[in-house]
Image: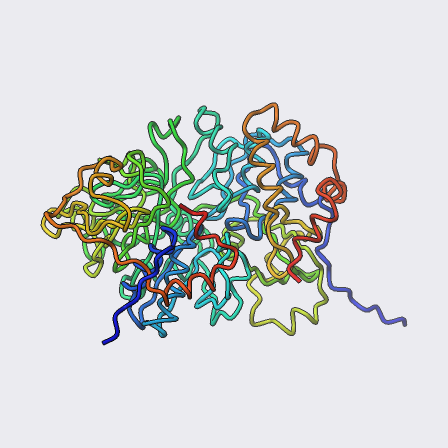
Length: 266
Length: 296
């Protein structure tokens, strides 16, 4: 078997897109929202490689299987409809979100993520007069109950990765192993699968549902992850390196991103 | 006897006439999602009219069209699922008015907001939300809307939303005929207009009825339910209008910077909004910029 050739130079967002794409399966249906250049690139890369029958909905433009050949800053742009195979407005997406047999995976991020994979994109402090007013919960609450969810960030700081979010917009495991069940979780929803940051990937310990360091991106260290994370992740005795993009994956991502948006994200 | 040919009624009116139905204290819904299909010109008209204490019900993802009204002091409370300037960053007026306690933000998520509007559109008492909405935080800070009741069929707890019925709704479309038939590219606008009592449509172009007839399976806005149509070229600017022009990133950044405090925002409004017709607004933005935004 020929040895896989990995790219030598790439940006964090390219590695993140390659990592995420490998986890998407053929014939699945995914959904992403605004400011989702990395998920969009991941879906396109998956379709171009191992998952040609993958489906994806871009929520803000409602385009299904956009074939727009280049990444753009705004995924709400109507040009997402170039080559699309259909259009589904949010009313329809939300009906499907309520029924977890329809949508296999979603992606989201916010300004606080905690060790149980809970997401805050609403506010910090008192609701009536918050210390920090974020944009709002938007679709994260509903997306949280899809079959599985990928959290992604454009930064890795103790302010972003916190012990406990001030407000749960997108529920992860809430407060532990029973959290989702107590909140009435639909049976098929596995919850958050990974937190993918510019320096590492966390998964969740099956017993405690706490974030666990899965791999560290090349060029970064476990010690660095510890010092830049506001919660204490579970750290196994051996932490592997995240697999970098292959030469082929990177070639696709570069061709898909002629404006070089990915290197500007994180 | 001379035959009298009946004439079907056009709903096209001036911006001033359409906006005159909006009064202080009303509940107004405003379409557009992230940077597309925002009725921005209509928001600027409400700013010029100096409206006060509006309750705004935007789509799931509001931006400039809401933030400009907040900054001009027109808004008392906001039914908020999301307010931001797409990838450009935070909506500065929304943020600083909320953080200083000068804006009442009623906390929603997009499905709760959507289903409250759908309850209004369908004329039903409430609309349930799916499993999973218990044990998370939005309903805890907005218990007036997110009510936990017992499902009469299963006995299980369920979160339900009451009808949300704005008095006036405004949506923007690229094309509309004079009777109000249109294809809404906005991904939330179909529900927004169905939920309201009075519907105003702003449109970049007026198209002949034949256009509607040739695309009738795509029509989402049935003219019967439209009360007024306003032709406003570049009416979504600085947002984008599907098939016509993309968003104006430079203007959005200028806006974001200007909205950092009251004094600089007032200057911005003097430059672009106060005392300006839509044509004067477009002149202030500049022809070369507007042409650059055209797709093709």
